[in-house]
Length: 239
Image 1 (spheres, helix red, strand yellow):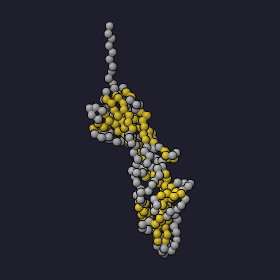
Image 2: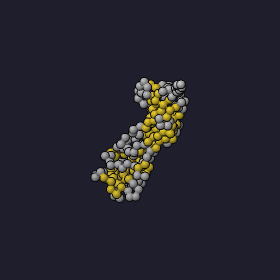
Image 3: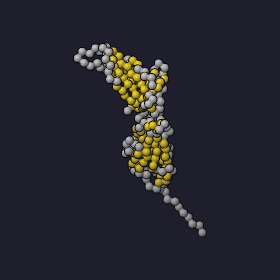
Image 4: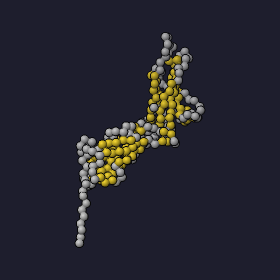
């Protein structure tokens, strides 16, 4: 199905119609209605800009063979599945079969997390893989949306914050986002990082952000820091 949100707004509904037969009388008008829920069903009434339970509300659209309907600021409900129905009438009074399409409205942000590296971990040898998960929360116990992607970026903290460019160096002045190498659809993902020249004594930060199919981004991004340390300690005996 389709997904919409504040970041991916549904502003126009469009479609096509055709009057069939050997000698069709021609299309007279196209009507649509928008509903939500499944028992009881609420219908959108554009004149009042409200949802009314159980009271159908068909409205005429612009055009016939190619038609459009421009939406006002509709009070969509987060996590709800909506249905758009359309029906055509010809000049002779024949009515077409009602067709429909559905979409989900989602304003809940997805989340990402790490299983490796551990929080504030020190590494004696190079970190070879980043491992994590992604998910899209639920709203009122119902699935809101599906996770789309998880992106990751890595920074080093000295002498100034620089971001790994995924081609050989910490050269970026801003996060250089990358899709993990494995794990689609990213509910469980892994990224190989054994080619990164970790420097002993530096603190590194890994950031991840999830995005769902309604174009909601995880805010704030998820962060994880670790230290790469191969410097041997010293001991001294005083007698």
